[in-house]
Image (spheres, helix red, strand yellow):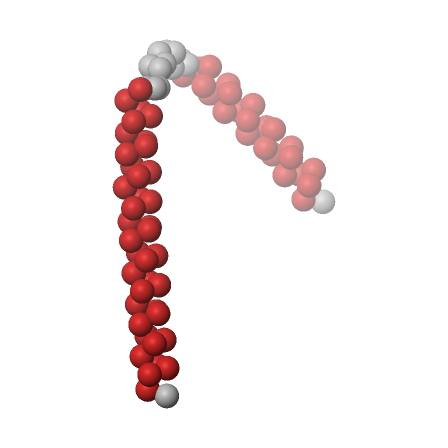
Length: 77
């Protein structure tokens, strides 16, 4: 019975060790692939548009509030 327990523990240690090594290798390979992709295919720089003026933004918020209020009243009944 003692050898069966030791074989089970031995198998557990080897299994957990293999999984740990595999996951560690997977993290390193994924990190390296990410660096290579970013090096050879960088994301294009997108110019940001000027922010909307305060009255324009307030109008959008009022419209959004009205739409949300109507939706809540419709589905609450």
